[in-house]
Amino acid sequence: DAARNGKQRIHYYETGEDEAHLQRISMIESLRKVLLEGGKGELFLVYQPKLSINDKQYIKTEALIRWRREDNTFISPEVFVNLAEEASLIVDLTNWVVRGVLEQVRQWHSDGLFIGAAINVSAQDLASSHFETFISETCAGVGVSPSYITIEITERDIMHDEASVVMSLRSLSRMGFVIAIDDYGIGQSSLSKLKGLPVDEIKLDKSFIMHLDESPKDQLIVKSTIELAHGLGFEVVAEGVENEASLEILKQYHCDQLQGYYFSKPIAAEAVSEWHKDHVENNTITGSVGYDQR
Ligand code: C2E
Ligand code: MG
Ligand code: MG
Ligand code: MG
Image (cartoon, rainbow, N blue to C red):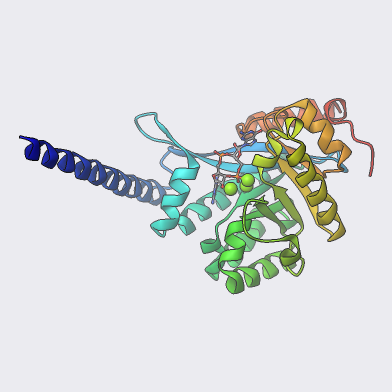
């Protein structure tokens, strides 16, 4: 009896693993299908405003992908972007994002709203030689200047696959795209390692920012990273600003751009237009952000 129970336990355990494995395969297959069918109404983009301290009339956003499946369940991008990377679907996914974002930016510009957007890319995108051509041709096709588009790559990814990624960043930078290092501070790199790269801004990982007001250690890390980054000529973006106390601290430290739930969650493109009208055209941006010029 005991032996049988033992066997059963093992059997259940294996079934559990098999199930997780099958679930991943089925998720990859449906993502592949959705991408083949141009998003199929299941993929869509939301945009989170990024406030610039020095240039109050111009807002940037970050495009973030969402997947709502047929059965109305949402899958986190952290899950399916990783799957896409493992299953070599990331280039197709990124191309879908690039097309959607550039079409949206063109739409904002033709509505008279000069809003920029950041696109998250992975090392695999940059390692393929087609990415620069694809994004620059898409920009030219819709008539959007690359200077409105930021390319975000994580610190982890940039340290990973150096040579081809760095080459790609150089040509993107020469074309006029803004280059940002995402999730900075949790990887293995140091700012001195970034100094030779064509990097315009670093985004401090939200784990340092979310509890900034309560954590003297995070304050020390953030303050010294901002100073060092400025000394090396990088702009600094804080992501994960959730309350006014953290905002005040970041103002004191002369952080250049701010992003977080305190200002806005990721929202639909139409809501960004409204947000732009409320906060920029009516100048209430200075009400909540109110920076002194550096
Ligand atoms: P990320 O690029 O670092 O994006 C920031 C994440 O933090 C987003 O989560 C955003 O919704 C969230 N966030 C923003 N402000 C706050 C805040 O104040 N508090 C908290 N707690 N969270 C905040 P999201 O949209 O779930 O995306 C997660 C990650 O998935 C992204 O991290 C990015 O690595 C990846 N991702 C999302 N969209 C894309 C995409 O189009 N392409 C690629 N390659 N990756 C993407
Ligand atoms: Mg990002
Ligand atoms: Mg991040
Ligand atoms: Mg990230």
